[in-house]
Amino acid sequence: MRTLISLAVFWCMISCFAQGNLQFNQSLLLSTTQASNVLLGTVPAGKVWKVEGFGSGNSGASECAWSFDGTNAAFRSGNVYLGGSAYQYSNSTSTFWLPAGTTVYSLNCSSNYRWISIIEFNIVP
Amino acid sequence: MKGCFLLFAMILLGDFFTQGNLQFNQVKLVSAQETVPVGKIWKLENYLPTVSLANDLNRLSNQATAGGSKNFVILVNGTSVYLQTTLTREVGRNDGYWNQDGYATSSDFKIFDAPIWFPAGTTLAASTNVGFISVMEFNVIP
Image (cartoon, rainbow over the protein chains, first blue to last red):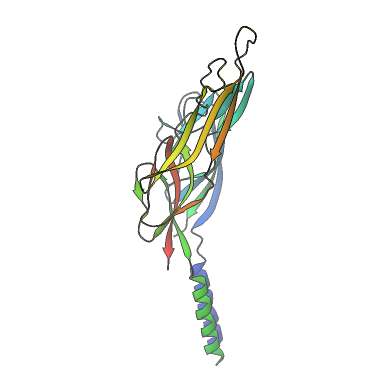
């Protein structure tokens, strides 16, 4: 009996220290071809978003921008002119995290297809 | 006796699992100066540049030195830390013999290799060409 109780306490201790805090909830692919500024989504309360990748279907030397306030560019994707007729696809950054309440807009970028790949996590207390 | 032994093993294991525990607290986008709170640490995961993707490529004919540079800077305890520097130069010519604008060449000096950890009391702020710093905050569990 004593052994069982000891084992139970031991298990509780392990569980206590094994808290992961971030729990996978879903993956999201937010996209648009809308020409004007468009709100793609908002990080819900109790969640965080990990932006894993983003891109746009620009051609030539142009770029599309995303914003957190609907006005100012926060990150971009597109093509950089290398000279002659050469262009190189590029992004301004890679993986980053967004807290709850953050809004993600795609700023006006003609009708180019813009996408953003996100992993949503629950914050487990 | 067996109970005592188990209790002893439990304490040892308990000690083992309490070493250096970090508990996720929140993620942040830092722009203006903020301080890592007491009992927390920050993990810098990435930064978001404010500038256009295209480099400052001043397309001046026949000037192989034309071009530009960009620094990506954050402030750590008020001191500038250069995360990345990008240099561009144009090579080629556009004169009576050659009718082309030349080609861009670009060098990227990136010291940033995520993550960077900051202890409590450190101040952090976005600076030149950086709009936001992506940070994860952890509680330090004794």
